[in-house]
Length: 360
Ligand SMILES: *Cc1c(COP(=O)(O)O)cnc(C)c1O
Image (tube, rainbow, N blue to C red; front, side):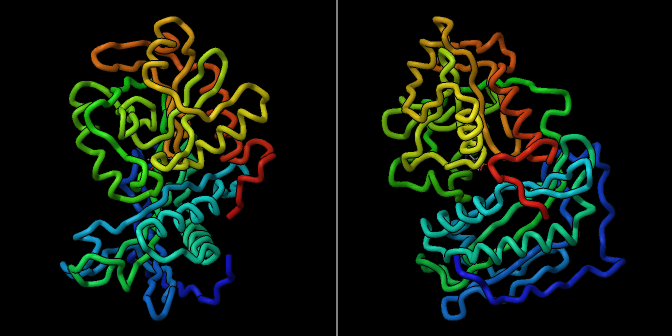
């Protein structure tokens, strides 16, 4: 990773321009944004330029802007956590920017200058640090994005890109404790195929998943469980989270073979569980194996992992009209232990043996 020589210009919002912070006990997810944003631009001749912090506000883009037509957009999701001693932490932020560079390369966008992106993030969160909530379990959700902004409707890699970071305070994901979800095993639509963009965090993957999610919601489910795009047999992900299960005390997650998003929470769960010494496997797992294990009492837990919820326990799976309950619909011991331990590391309540925390 090369060092950058770009200065970040800071334009703070004028006193009258600043917004009031919302009530911390009623944040929900993704509705309120802090006072500032970080932006920088890339041009094919100049490289990255014009890195700046400025008041949060709209962009002006012509209707011909490439991203509006062909979806050249990638993003990241990460959080800042306030510890009880008022320190503010990021969790593995370099991994987010490294992943963003991998996503960028997959759709012909420029690699990030990762040190510069991290410095932009630090500057933004330091400036808006009062927006990192103090309410239990609440965090500052951070959204880095890159889009193609060349005004041209001819499809190709663009000559100009915009990178920005915005931040929003969000409430605790489980204000009343875990509520295991009912999941619909999707056997009609697929999320990704080998050779596609499933392992990149592109906006396109999300656009393509909305219909399946809506149909599942209409049937009373929280999310869909995605099967592989070729045979609709092996499990891939659950909604926008990675998928884990426990069968006969073995913690299992599907391997990263190109169509699964390499989650940072997924990797953290694997490292933590391996450090505890149990059996942990990254292997293919078919929906038939899962349904059979559930029916003969060997399926102990299922859960999703991701930055927003950390761990989301699954209480029920429905596949081709058959429904199985998991752990009597309750969160299991592995889910609870992983959740507690990860949150304790993220909020600075316990040692960080893996070196995941970065102080702002
Ligand atoms: C972002 C994302 C995840 C979770 O990744 P984390 O780094 O753990 O937040 C999982 N699946 C998909 C499809 C995602 O976009």
